[in-house]
Structure formats: structure tokens, C-alpha cells
Length: 237
View 1 (cartoon, rainbow, N blue to C red):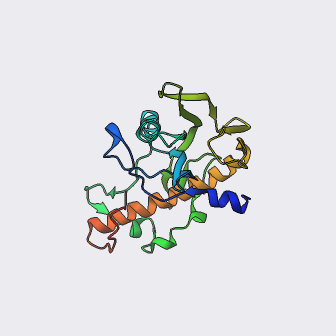
View 2: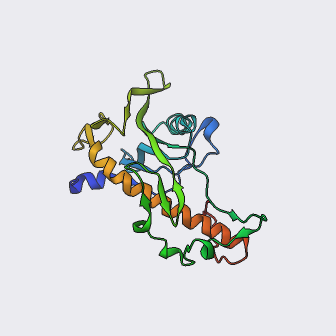
View 3: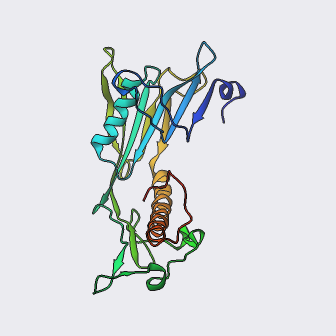
């Protein structure tokens, strides 16, 4: 646990959209999956480290994210990107059509509940340690066949470069995050992540993702048929 002084000097940055970018990135807005802010000499909180995680993003897209953070804001010292590959590529199993081409109601055909809160993670069936995952007989997550972590920083010339080798999250025993000296004294300069424990939590994540995808697909079905009361502009199928 962090000391009271460290909690005053730093904080976890989560669920906030960031728009303080410069140069060609000045019109960009980005919400990191996780970040660490540190209080500077002017008593302002600066974002120093960013974590970006992608389940469906391409490697190039995740690298572009790292470049945005590091080139777009000089305060940021390090970006860690984590990528997963689903094989085959995931596609929603809805809508379902009969032999005449008429769309079927998944609630009637499959028993998917109308109440979104009744689509429970515990009811998702994980068919292997890394997927695929099914619910009501449909596949909502494919097998995770690849998982990796990389760290990106700026070199002495300000160029964005990869620091250290990529770590295989599905097979390695541990991963090391070397923060160096950009965090306040009292933070460990290196954090070691136990990847065996991580893989256990990954199973939960796959099930949660499958349930969320099912809910989103049902929301889309209800909206299409004029039954939805969803007015969330951030909803994404």
C-alpha cells in the first residue's frame, strides 16, 4: 500500500478523457485504460505513465496509441501496450435468420433474457483456459491465441522507441515493468507481474467480455426493433 505522502504526490488516472496534446496531435482526445499521475513543482498533476490494452485493435493501432501519448505530450514518460489476438477474428453471432431470411428473436429462439442484468458472467461457458466462450449456445469470444506486453519510451533524441523485448503473456512466468525515476521516491523502480496469476484473471476477463458482447448485441437488436430505452451516446456494439 502507498504511504499517505505518495498518495498525495501521485494518483491512478482512470476513466478520464485526456485532450492536452500538441503539434499534429492537438485535436486528439484519448482515454487510457490506466495511468499514473504525479504532482509537479507547480502543484499540478501530470500524467507520466499510460497503459493501453487492446482485444480487437491491431498491433499498428496500439503502436499509434503509444506514439500519440509520447509525441503528443512531453509530460508522459512511458507507455505500456498490451495486445491480445482472438482466433478466428470475433464476429457477433447476431442477428440470426431463418431459412426464408427473416430475422429471429434471440430471446425466443435461444432464451436470451430481455433483462440485461440477467445475462450473467457465471453463465458463460469457457471451453478452454483461453476461450472460446459461449452463452446460450452461441460463441461470444474466440480463443485467445496470443497475448503480449511491450513498453515504449522516448530516446535521447525524442524519438519514440520500444524499450526491452516483448513478453509473451500466455507462456512466460513473469513480466517486469521498469518505471525508472519518473515516479516519486518510494515507488519501486521495477514492478514484477506474476503471469500465472494474470492468466487466472484472464479467464474471468474473457467471460466478462463474452457477457458484455451478448448484452451489446441484444441492445442493438432491441434498438433495431424499436424496443430499446438505451440513450447512452457511449454505447458501442
